[in-house]
Image (cartoon, rainbow, N blue to C red; front, side, top):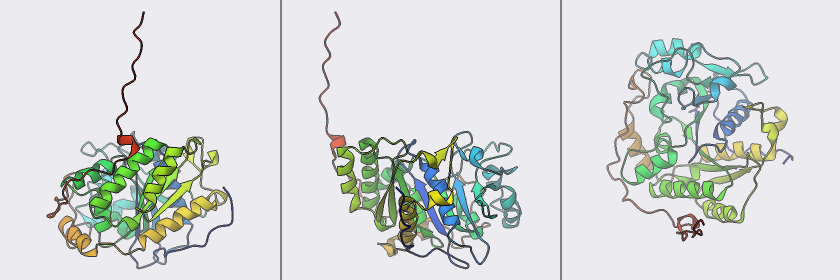
Length: 348
């Protein structure tokens, strides 16, 4: 739907301020998560320039051959995140290699959108970046906004955290002390997808996460529309998260297998509303600042520099919280109601 652009709300980080970090997560694949991440990165890129020359970047957490980003990039780096993972223990080497290992999208204004993805020679120990800050923190010093295109496993991570296991990637980012974070949860309008999202938001709420910093994007990328049960689950979500944004179907947003983000498309009311909701959510104070500060102290070293981070991205595990919440069941929804098995007549 086209219309006048809504008023810009919130505050976008500029020179000298902590970067904006947006983990784009989902409970399943096939909901248009990477397309939404690309459009969000392009929209943030066009919201002014940074006095320090910092960029907007897409940080791809998917392993090689499972990610669309190497094909979407207009410029492909000779090396990628697999190589950068070997450089995190040496801050000077990392500073030299980060630009050589960064692909780019052409934004049409002479300033590229960075894309950090796995390209170039395969690094055998590397099997994809972790979506949490233990891998991406060294890159933040070069960015004013980082859009983390995560994976469809975040609902599992939240359930594991609720059961007393390791903190989820979203919890780690929300606890990270030198970033303004808003979590963007992408789903489609099908009843099953919204039920999974409702379960995940219930788990996040029971983990004590600041729900005002969550934005749910309901992306009708297939054009199937809404069903009655979908609307009821949207109503249950509405009072649990900071904002819900409905992205209407438009085939022009993805053409020839890749996302499109022309100024006309980015001026759509739903996409402008998405950017406004994300910036506003990142500016909200945490609901439990003491708990988040304790989690940050336990999960991260005192100095968040490249040299202080562990060299291997997959060996730095987050410790379980000292006061993990007791496991609790998610709210019962129609998806949990048992349906009697249908009896089929015996074949003759």
